[in-house]
Image 1 (cartoon, rainbow, N blue to C red):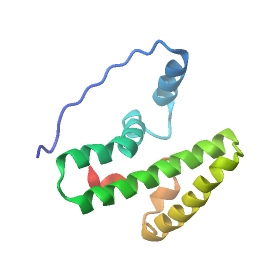
Image 2 (cartoon, rainbow, N blue to C red):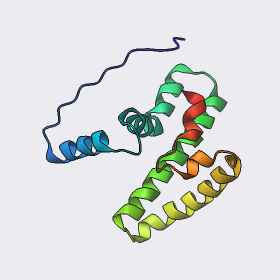
Image 3 (cartoon, rainbow, N blue to C red):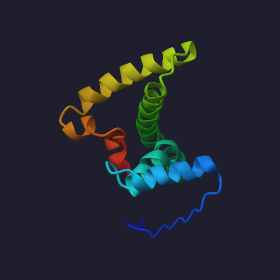
Image 4 (cartoon, rainbow, N blue to C red):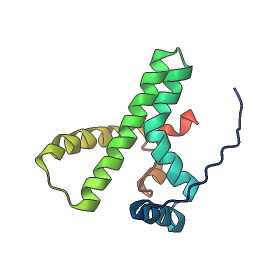
Length: 127
């Protein structure tokens, strides 16, 4: 397996929402563009990539759990940011609270995860 590849992506958005999104990504001072994009892409697509190239079911499941945890964390942040109070989101909050407490217990030595909105420390072993 290659240790490094060159991946380039050029995008010139036309839709107003995509323009606003790209401006936000470019101007974010807390997290770099690459990190923001990788967290979002890894959270959903990493399991697909590993499942397509691995015969190790346990590895795929381990990665899937980490990706689900990252997606739950992102969904919870969206709920809070938008001030949503929807009964259909209550199970998400309960699941997030459970997985978040487990994550804190298993990553108690990683203080950095408390300082970043989208910490993908749980996915870092898979890169």
